[in-house]
Length: 407
Image (tube, rainbow, N blue to C red; front, side, top):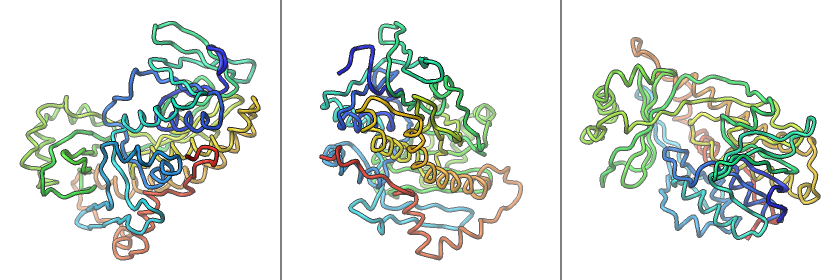
């Protein structure tokens, strides 16, 4: 290990990208420090969808048995209905051992990664430690300024700093990197309702004129995403909780007998949906990955898996250069080139769904919309349904664990 105020690589943020990158670099023998501003990972309604590509990666890392011990729910199909047109996306034809996606509390997944990383002598996780700025030497980022668990402001030097601190990234802003925003027509309310024996399993969505909801089977409860027009949170909360209960019961009649469990809007969390992407993910000494490089819409639940894939590519490309103690902008550009096409493809799909499906859900409902013709084609062509399943569960250009990290 280097001195307490130095690290070969400093990672800001202990989310999926940060913890995966920290684990992989530590297994490569790189001195790596992850700074997580919270004391633990217990934050509800974060993305909990772990797709088949990530499950395969965990197997390659020797973590499959540990993951199996975590509380999780396997989903082998997705059903959704748009203005009466029903489409099923089946994961049964996916390549490899995992023909499903898993729903697991993100805090459990992150603790599992942290525990695995702690076994490596070159890894350290600093909790209650918030990165508040970047240290510069001319145009090069050479470390971070951070606030430690005692509230003291300190510096840590590093050969490479990686911003995994989310879509409001402090380090991205400090570097003057500004993402291009594509806009989104909706925000999302998240809440829970009980799930009873005999209720439909899996993940299902209903999109009708003026409203939409997605029910996610979490075992003994449903996690529900209720779609509202962008920026309408305050107005809709003012209409009262009864309006939400009534709308949900009419959309998903099987939940009508339990919507009264929503007693107030204290039970309802708002997700401010963003969709954006940096044109350049790096500057000298700094790399952005995950949401810091590209904020994803919740459509398809691909965010965690894209962030993890970024981390895998970064570790594979950068580990040997970090062991040598120097990473150039050319090496960082290589990471972006590797992950650029999957990001662009998935964001293009999300933008298309926003424009052609979500637009129905957030309309005013005064007109009778018609489902996109493409939806009917997908419904009737099994090959297209399998392709949709692959894009969701595996994604374009899925990453494999580097050989040095496999167990």
